[in-house]
Amino acid sequence: MKMNELLRFASIATFAVAFSHAAWAEEISQNEAVAYALENNPVIKGTASSMRASSEQIKTAEAGKLPVIDLDYGLVYSDNPLVSFGSKLNNRSVVVEDFDPDTLNNPGASDNYFASLSLKLPLYTGGKVTADIDEARANYASAEAQHNRTTSSVIYQVKRAYLLAQAAREAINIARSSTDSAKKHVKTTQQLFDENRTVASDNLTAKVYYTSDKGVISQAERQYSQALNSLKQVMGKDLDADISVEPLPPASKAIVLPETSFAESIALTNRNDLKASDQSINAAEARTRIASSASKPQLGLEARSSLYADDPLVDELSWGVLAVAKINLFSGGSNKSRVSAAREESNKLQAEKAGKELEIRKEVRNALASINEGKNRLKLARANLSDAKQAVSLVNARYGEGRTILIDLLQAEQALMKSRSESLNSQLLLEASKLELQFAMDDFDEAKK
Image (tube, rainbow, N blue to C red; front, top):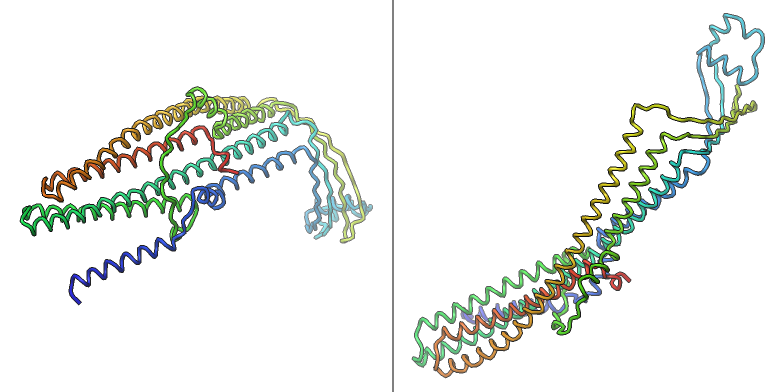
């Protein structure tokens, strides 16, 4: 087999493998990618777990209002005189002989079974129990808002990664189209050279240009592969999975943008990270009340029933009820310091919220400005692309007739490729900016359903 035939066969085989891969790679839509990510993205799973943990903390805090019931059962074995005599007292089995000094001082080892059933009920805690519940509920609401914002973030990341993959796929088409044209120019230049209508340097230049364009295809294919990996990563999909994206649709011509003030208002209302900040402030205020409760009276009630016996069958019962009132008179200023620290934490969170509001407004304005830039650039790029196509057609016709030089044709082809790339980049900027505006306004409710 001759070398050129071998190369031709290898080229056909490579194309067949590439075509086969494209044929069995799973093509997914943007909506399918988002739906898969909502089920499998590990970050979303993590925030969902945090939300469930916060929900359990509410139950823990609410349990502070309820009585605590404990049951103990055990065995005491000791030769301690006090323990031994105490066991006899608890068992109501003391006799006169037990007061003999030798018996009291040297009782020997004794064993005793005991059981205790107690009930403790807080009557007043200075507002601590209520504040604990309020803090837990605020923490849950904050975790829920953070989970919702994370969900919006993942949707944005998936849509953006999908868009970049579509753009990378379109870049491959542009590179292949340019390479096909360059291949035709090689053939035309070779024909003109054979007819002595051009020089050898033009023949070599055409081949160099063709080879250079093939390198652009490899670069575009690498970028497409990387874009797919980024998409699979944010989806939570195995990186070995074979997927492809749908072709990039034409950019919509009619884009209606909201007024800046209206968009900012919607963003400040919808943003779940801002809602999380509000709930964090509520939790901090609850912690302030918790710290303040340490200086207030504490009232509690405890009822206990105790059983003692010198055999496992407990048959002796005693009981008691204890009511306790407690108030801290002096703690070295620690209670006051804790209250002040909690208040400053609340102040810090309020300042951070104000800064977040400014950041949100800036994000909205930046997105609107980028959309306007994308619209203008796309309009100019479309007009320029039309002119570039016409220029290539005219120069190509003249070159085929030998009425112009190769450099004019290659310059026209480069201008066309640049125009195609600018048109693609302008559309990418426009669509990405629209996603950024959605993300800034937290406007992904349809995708979450």
